[in-house]
Every structure is written in C-alpha cells, then in structure tokens.
Image (cartoon, rainbow, N blue to C red; front, top):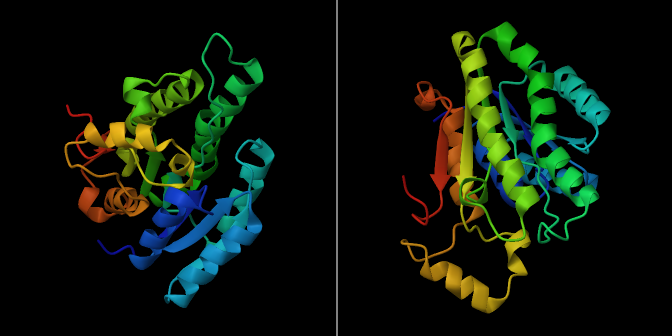
Length: 247
C-alpha cells in the first residue's frame, strides 16, 4: 500500500487517532501536513516522522475557524504543491443529557465535528479535481450509527459525517476521487482514558474480539482507504469496532 509521492492533510493530528494516522501515512511514504491547535504537539509529531525518515510539516489550525482552515490549506499547498489525501479527524465532545444540553455545547460540537469537515473538503477539493485523484476519509464513530446517552450533539455530528461522506462521494466519483468514512468503536485514547473502570469492563464484555481497539487499528484502516488498493471503494463506512456492531 505504497503512498510514495502522495501528500496527506490530517486534522487533529497532534494526538490520539489523528497522530496515529499521520504516522501510518508517513510510514507508507506520504508527505504529511499535520494540522491542529497545539503547535508544540504538532512539532513533536513532525519530529517523530522525520526521525523515522518521513516527510512532515506542522500547520497550526483551529477547525472551528473557517478562515484558519482556508489559510492553512493555502499554506499546505504552498509547501507541498498539492493535497492528495484529506483525513477529517478533528473532533470534540461536550456531553450532557439533551434536556440539559446548552445550545453553545450543541453548536461547538456540530461546528467542530461536522461543519469543519465540510469546510476542509471544500478547501481541498479544487486541488483534487484538478489532478483527477483524491482520497477523502472522514473519521466518524459507532455512536453516529447507534447513538449514545448524553451525546446527542456528538452522535448527530458523527451521523452527519456519514451522510456527508456519501453525498460528496457521489459528487466527485467521476474525477477518480473516493470519499469514505471510518467508524471506530471503543478505542483506547486520552478521550476514553478517564472512563470509570466498571464502565470499561462493561464495554469490553460487549466486544466479540474481547479487547479495546487501538489508535493504530484505526490508522491502518485509514491508510488502506488512502491507497490505490481501495480505488474501487467509495461512499463506504468501514467499521473498526471489534465486532460490537455488525451489518
């Protein structure tokens, strides 16, 4: 699954799943543009990739800002000359029961998790259309498929990503651009580290493979969808959940 000569832009690349995706794409040969709010962490990931012989550069960007998205994409194009692969990974949670959820928390999650993905796609699509090749991969969630108590905003944003994936896939397929989504289940990251031990045990009991997923499990799926081997896959949601949701 060689990606030599390709350029990937990964949002939320400073930690967790985004960092793992950046490392995997770089290991496959792609030059990686790392985007997130924390410049220090981005520089650390960039240094890690370069130390392994890869190519990377950091581009501080808050996906909640349309102008920052546009300026960062311009900077990436200026540095690398093109963007072949977009991984929309940046996301936040603001959990609360719907009856108590504040409008500001609804808006923050939808803007970061869904609207930002649309804006990033819009910013890079011109480059992909011009070269008649592209891979767009949106990181959704099992909770966008089955819902979750206290996460009406998060679940809605991730379900929206699935619809966005399918709609854009239909729009750009004729230009050899594929658009897919990866839906992680229970993945061990900093976001899940704070869950109570009893809750973690109950979750593990529901997973047929009997273990939590890792950020590398998700990254391997992203790398595959970015490759030429996945050229005939588009509009698809690839579940990476250990079998907790099938069908």
